[in-house]
Length: 26
Image (cartoon, rainbow, N blue to C red):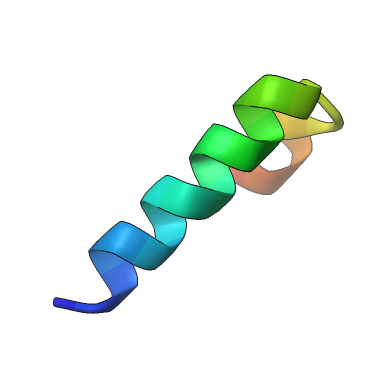
């Protein structure tokens, strides 16, 4: 279950920056 926290960190980072967040989710 290491991928979950990893993606959470990326999501948090992306959310904070708000940089092409939708692109990653697409």
